[in-house]
Length: 201
Image (cartoon, rainbow, N blue to C red; front, side, top):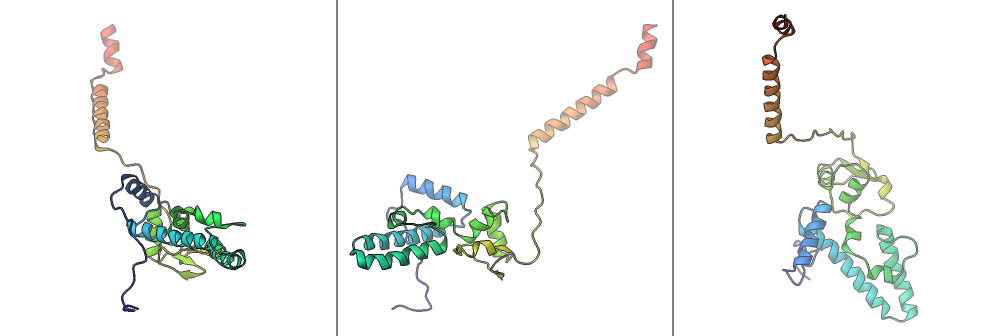
């Protein structure tokens, strides 16, 4: 049974550690969804892999036995919001980790416009600024249920976003300063109108 105090791993690592295509894809997903580390991605992949395995087992059962269990599986995925409408087992078999990542609290906060970036959404959640069903929730990896999505809001006062000014590059700033100095020197060197008139006379 194991020690109840010791937490089990909630994810499985890929069998082949070094695959260029997989590593690049993982890096892109980590960047897009603002994940802290690859373990969060592995956790989503493990959940989806488990659901696909259940769907394959159900396809091997007789029709009567399958119908009841099939409904349970599809209802659980519809409850999370991964599937919509009238899904079938074929829809479960083509599920990807991105579908599960889209249901994370961090992603939904970002999609709803409560944060400018996924990383900012993570910061707001961890710092206790986001509520679900009126209760503070500080877990970015929380899988939001379809019914709970509308209840996501600020916990306490609404955060005010400051517009960031575009950073000025040092080289560009120096060039602008040099140009301003040249213009000033040019203006100083320019003869006054009275002096020009005297010369003409």
